[in-house]
Image (cartoon, rainbow, N blue to C red):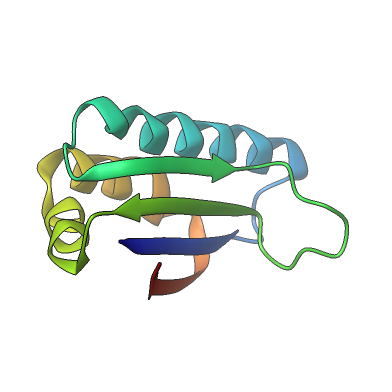
Length: 100
């Protein structure tokens, strides 16, 4: 199994309220992929951060293997969410993939 974790920092130009709405939209979009992308075993977007966090939201997802992760990354439904709800608003993206 492969765990895929991403932490995003949203652009500075957004107010705290705008960031909350953007994060909620990202959460809805990515978690909504569970029923559309068969390669996803688990997917969760955490938008409730504790003080001292350096990112604004985090994706934690699980795939059968690295090929399944690559298929998810290229899946049209994922690309649509990434291009429409994530990339336009993100300043920093950090990812970490590992076998479990």
